[in-house]
Image (cartoon, rainbow, N blue to C red):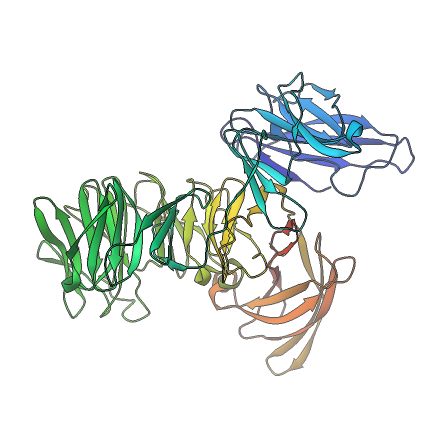
Length: 574
């Protein structure tokens, strides 16, 4: 039984569908077990919907994830049959489709599109809208891995293995290719925004799909950071000048004395952070609201509040009146009570206070007025009060989660990218997402899709579609152990990895403790056979290697995405 998860109607409600085969006879009965939770998965209620078939269920594609259908219903396909169930799972009925092998997607407004093979057109794949009772007129066929990405928007792959992503804005009435972004250079931008310089043009986006192009400022010094701002955009050039675009016209002012590294806007105010502190500029003038001395002393209003290492680079984030400034500190002076810290303003940068508990910050994102995520060397933290207090949400795994390969990019308070992983539950769980061939880093998660960059072109159209991705399972067990020498243990291990092709490489990772994951390392690699099994022997140093974990980063094969997986930690006796 393999659970398939999708969001269902209502906040905190989830539905999973499991296909259970019973018997091998041609007229055996199979059951679709539908379970529903309305408390985030803590408790479940179940209903069994018997489905009789004159043929065996196929190994894959037998059950599609339930969709939020017309009204309050759930819509899913099983054994080539479309089924509509009440949201409380009390009743279910079959729907006769105009063709075979139905596949349904529904948008946020619960408007549904059903794709099927049309027998009158030699099995041509077409689609039609479905209102819970009747089908509309035929439309172009559903693309592969189709998902509803918004109101009336459907996204999917055009043909198997082509990597071309198509989008419909009219619920499948017509499709357009999503553009590739030309070769260029990434510029710093606050997530989830993305910015790229291509010649004399700058491309900016909020979601990786719809891009806006603006001209580069009339400056010989190129921009190093830029993002959308009220009325246009704001950018920082290599020579320390701040450029502001209003209604297509660029103006600038000199902030080089600050040795700036970041810019932001809060209302009508422009904020600049650099080695020498933080400036706030309005029509009334420019004022240094935070001072940083050459020895690293940080002062606010003349009062010493913190110390940072020399030449520490400052970053900024702003949303409405909330402004956060931070720097990343190394190991030096970590025991100092006034080391580093996060500076917080709730009045558009007029005044700041230090959040002493957040000493060092690697990446930070203000998602909304209350939700803020940040990472440091120990993990992912979340704040639900606008950055006043943070609590640890997840310990980040350097190898498995790849925090050093990217930062934060949340599109909603619960959905986003953390390094090389994706979360859809606010960071409680992190799923490693593989790169497409030639991919370099994940850029963001938007609904059911993950965006990714590549070395020459940015394959924004080559999107991982999470709702249709395969979620493998991995196990690891200890078969035997023996002394290899002084302080060394030889461990025989074996395990399984589902839904991955034969010859898949599995990494074995060792760690001293569960809390020591930042220090673990890949000590060996094993290879799966045609049944997904792997086994081998590894040597462990008993003074430091007490735990083992198997890790699979995931793989993209044509139009099929297999997400990453990790086994449970395995304790190896000394």
